[in-house]
Image (cartoon, rainbow, N blue to C red; front, side, top):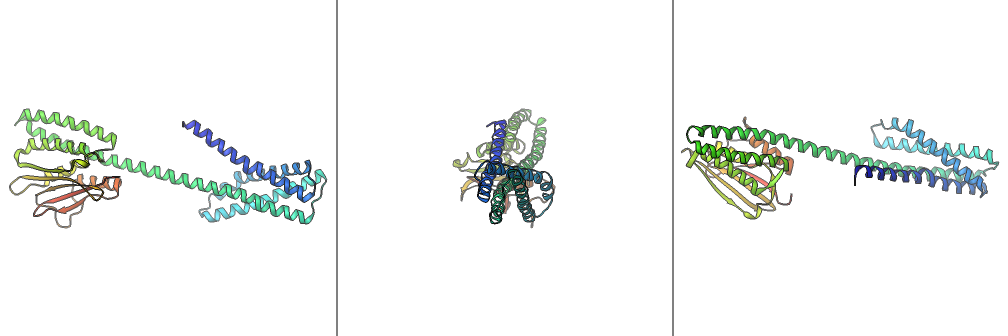
Length: 350
């Protein structure tokens, strides 16, 4: 439904509620009460009912215009509501009395004391209940609207933070990739050219992934393969990669650019004593989660290591993005007999 149609519908509903609570119900109730109190079932009862209804509506408008804005400044919700109910009851009693006295003078009727008390008690009970119900519904709607707005703000803030984190990763990755290609230009121009073409392919993926937010796991792994081919052009046979991929989970959506920083970190810090870089990438389904591990056989993390230690921001950004998306971040474990294992858990039904 277009915004204009929604606005018209809301206004129509608001008008209907206003007519029911402030016109129809008070008119019928006050007319019957006046007729019973005076014993006159004629136009004078209808006129008095109209006068009471109009006076109550006037008092209600004055309350909304001058008193309600000041009551809204009271921080305690319970105190504000009690004062509004008290003022509502007092306004209804005063308005009904004024209208009843004026109409009694105009139409020349008298109200029996007992009947007048019944009339005032009825007005005091019925009309505040009607307006109290309207106030309660209004508070409920305001609360729901406040919760909706707060949820939207939280969602927008999270999306902005995720985009900011991703924006930090992109230039970091491309800077390192260009360094690798620059090192190849003089030693192997053909391989450098092929690496540039692969980098252009990766750049297109990054742009598409930034727009989509989440991508199929298979595409993220293919992006990692392209990155590793660029690194293999630099390290040659010293870079060895072992893959164990469960094909059943390749369609599961994951946040884009969460695996490449982990693999890059393993390539950077996973050198063995002989200069080899042995990586193990494993993807499997475990307990309603996709468990992704990137393991190396380097010197391992220092004792007491926590994600975020050190000058690099790759692991920290991935950890923060995962926490904001799923509520849990990276797991860092020791690899046996040597090295580091970084674990990502992605809910299958997230």
